[in-house]
Structure formats: C-alpha cells, structure tokens
Image (cartoon, rainbow, N blue to C red):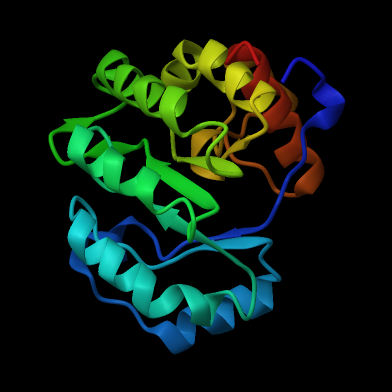
Length: 205
C-alpha cells in the first residue's frame, strides 16, 4: 500500500444500510442497478447485526449475483469469535469478505474509532491470506489510520484490501474544500480523485 500508483477506483454495488437494517430489498431492482452500474463486485444483501440471516441470504442469492459480477459476503458480527470461526470455515465458498465499519450493533465507529479498529485488526490478522479480498464498509478516517499496519500486512499476505466511498465522500480538510470552490462534495471524477488522494494522505496510506 505504499505505492500510490497501485490505488484503483472500482464500481461497487451495495443494498445500503437502510435496507440492511430493515431487511427489505428488491432483488430485481438490485440486479438492474448492478448491471446498469457495471459494478466490479456487489454486496450480497445482508441483515445488519444478524449473521445468521446474512449467511442464509448469501446462500440464497450469491449464485444469482455471481452471474452479473463478483459477490461479496458481509461478515456481520465479525467481532464475535464464534462468528469469525464460521467465516473462516466458509473460505471454500467465500472469496470476498466485507467488514461493516461505519457502525456495529453496539457502537458507532466515528464515536469510538479505537474499539472498531481493534475489532477490525483482530479480524484482519486472521482473515488475510485466507480470503482473496477484504473490503471495509464505510470506515471513518481515524479507523483506517489505526489499521494501517494491518492493511499493509494483509496485502503482503496476498489479500486485496479496499474501502467504499462513504469513507471519503466529503473533502478531507478545509484546504481541499477551498480548491473545490468552497464545496465539500465532488462534482465529477477528477474532483473525486482529488478527494480520495487527500483522504489517503490523511489516513497515512
């Protein structure tokens, strides 16, 4: 992760936190989104804070989504040792794993970044080298900064790491905001790339 030329931006489809919390989603509409966006990979619909339901939905929908793009399994409740053991045992059928990093059932990660980072680091140390790809769902900047060594080690063990745009959808600092004409949000891909670079620098990546 020290080679900035290695960074790439990918199109990533997700049902969203609201649907994950409610459990309500339209598979047909989601597949249309995946096709229209030409997503490089997509979250298999999950249930926030409910590993059992998420696993059942993976087994129900992953093969359908795999017809359109690479499916990603969300490891809900990954901080629980028993859950992580199950995820490891799924390695034969799960290549890409996402860790919820915006919030857990008992904590909002922007309010307690250290707790979320500690949970993620323990999981990364175990998962990396076992699965091909680990994705962090919406991690706050401070969490990624704390995870730097674990992310670097993950890539050295042969697992790709990524995080989604909720992590840097706003200008990372006031200097960048001024470059964007006083705006926090990007208007095009060039500005989005500027924001990503600034976010990565602040995350020490």
